[in-house]
Amino acid sequence: MKKVVLSVTLALMVATAGEQFAMSDADRAMYEEMLENNPADIFVAEGGEIFEEELGGEEALAKFLGIEENALPKYIATFPRYIEKLGNVVGVDQVLQAMMAEQGKEQIKLKDPKMFAILAYVKSLANDEQFNIDINANEHMKASYELGKQTFMTPRGGRGLSCNSCHNKDTIGLILRTQPLPDLAEAGAGATWPAYRMTKSSLRTLQRRFQGCMNNALMAVIPIGSKEMVGLELYVSKLAQDKQKAIAVPGLKR
Amino acid sequence: MQKKVKFIACTALLSTALTAVNASDLTKTYEMPDATKILEKDLLKPATTYTLPKSCNLNDTASIARGEYIFHNLNGDQAKDAPPEGIVKSIEKDGKKEPKQYGNCVACHNIEGAVGGGNIGPDLSNYKTYFIDTKIRDAQFVYQKIADPRIDNPATHMTVNLTTGLFDEQEICDLTAYVMSKK
Image (cartoon, rainbow over all chains, first blue to last red):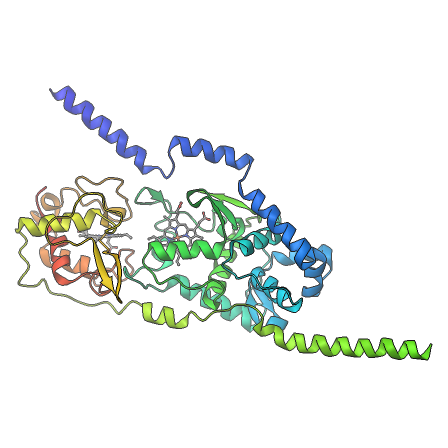
């Protein structure tokens, strides 16, 4: 009798232990395979095509930014950054929108998957570069970084949580309903998005990922491209920079 | 010859004029939506002290059952089991039907019967034996902790459940009764 109870308990323990992992073995095998062949590559290639054909590609972007074309990778690694002619600290996607406007092209919305794809392509030009963001470069950068940090730290929403409630040094690696809490710095979150999100079967950007966490935590979701979102991206990218994480886009996420 | 120079000068002038217009315009050519109002409305109110209501009957089995349901589930859409009496699966907000939110306490706490329980908060298994019977904790402490954990620990990583308005006093009472009950 005792033996039966014991084995039932054991079976139960194994079952619950399995659920403790973010990925099942089958998912893990799929992840390994996708690492070789990231499904996002096709989106990124599509983004590249639109970028070349409709916007004039790297040459046009470099010209727009007032830099040499071969300086582009290093320059992209400084975003989000203050662009004087845009009057704000902006993400690469906002620069692309301004280019579309200047060229009289129909503008693609920031939240459009097409924009995610172009952004992924342009950011991938900086692959293997480390971030080189200067948060003290000017008042605009200082303010944006502070706003991002404040947005990260401020508790809000239905459950009174902040990003920092889950992403702080004390809770890293602890389990939130079967999900280990990632270390945003070590995971190089800023350097690995846009990424293919396996659970969503689509290419997502960093700001879109932030929205996911806001939604899960019952925080009001704020729009992509808002000052606060750009600030959050700046804050999270700086975390990756401080850990010397190289840009590797598209990433692959659970 | 002269004509040609003039022409070039002219186009140059024209194009600088055009770029100048564009340049001043560029600050408005991309999306930068305002989020400040959304964020202001969403802010968490200051830490608040609460007293266990007199109406709270910690031995009421119906209350304990409701507390158990709220503890283990995320919301009315995700919950698989039928809710005990007194718990709804959806609510109306601004004329729209949306899932009723539950505590999802199991996301951070292990407890009897937890499936995929987290470990961000302490293990609440055997809570009655270890914490209540030993008088380390009492009902007032547990109620306050669930209602607003910041009173006990200003730097807490736990959710705030009453000050946010997500739950009412009775629901906090149900959770308190469940955590303190013998399981």
